Amino acid sequence: MQKAGGIISLIAGVFGILSAGVTLLVGGAASAFNASGSSTVVGLG
Image 1 (tube, rainbow, N blue to C red):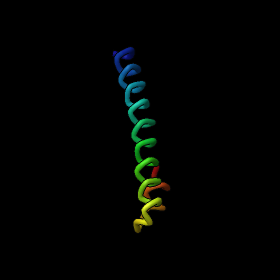
Image 2: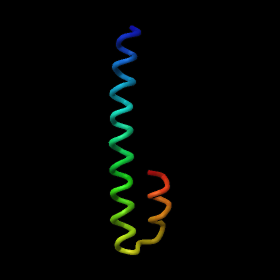
Image 3: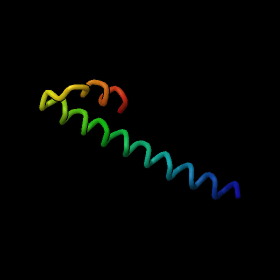
Image 4: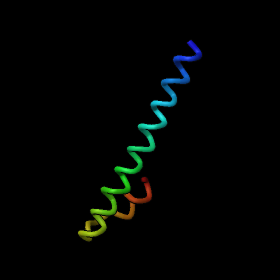
């Protein structure tokens, strides 16, 4: 059970890093188009 938890946490960490990258990408695109609230999205990423 301990090995399975480690594998699941490793996968969750990879997904977390990928989602942060996508959030930064979306925030950057919104900033390029002068959308309101884009700095908040970049900050969350």
